Amino acid sequence: MKTRNVSSIFPAQPFLEGAGVHLRRVFSRPEAELTDPFLLLDDFRSDEPGKYLAGFPWHPHRGIETITYMLEGHVEHGDSMGNKGVIRKGDVQWMTAGSGIIHQEMPKGDSENRMYGFQLWANLPASHKMMSPRYREINAAEIPEVKVEKGVRIKVISGSVAGIRGPVEEIVTEPEYLDVSVPPGTAYMHPVKAGHTAIAYVIEGAGNFGEDSRVAANRTGLLFSDGDQIRVEAQGEGVRFLLFSGKPINEPIVWGGPIVMNTQAELRLAFEEYDNGTFIK
Image (cartoon, rainbow, N blue to C red; front, side, top):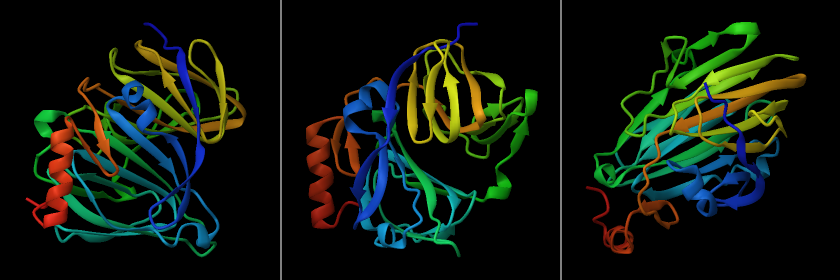
């Protein structure tokens, strides 16, 4: 088994998005070729309502999937397919925009004004860019938590751990999305398919990651080199991180705001259709 090294480190940077939401952006367009099939990761944890209540009013997506994971507070959602709902603590919203969807996401805090969450964008290959949109809301109770060796706990959103599969399946890039907690003084090895992109994002504590033992603390993203497994050793009071892996698409990326296609012509068409009212298929 080949243990992966850390090939890049992404400190989350302050960013203003939507109608004025203050968040931290971990990676995005400049890193897209490295993080393929993942396009973007935003960390929107905040205790200040003035920094998140403006939210993300109605906007389009095409050619991608958006995955929102909540730790505290909730987000109210509505879209052009008629879906309406609220994702709360521990819930996941997995939205496949495909040929096109228009939606809004309006974050709300809990009784202590906490609104903690993350949004990941995953690309779709050319063969699936114009697939029918699909919306899935996964309640916290549907997400299994697996206890593995040495007290390590893993919430399995997609993928499989110790034979336990997450509730999100049938995704073309074969993604694994895990929420991993490693107790103090513990080292853990997690298998990852060779050839798949693997990224960790630390959300609590600190740890040493990879064969080369790179230190990373809260709000730090790490991209791993190729191999069969990743290694993490918790520091201090332990470490909690999100782990994403998936099969690279290896196709051209032409990006315009919330729309990601393969060619400039496809991108122009998407915005023309949005302007003339034919965006939704």
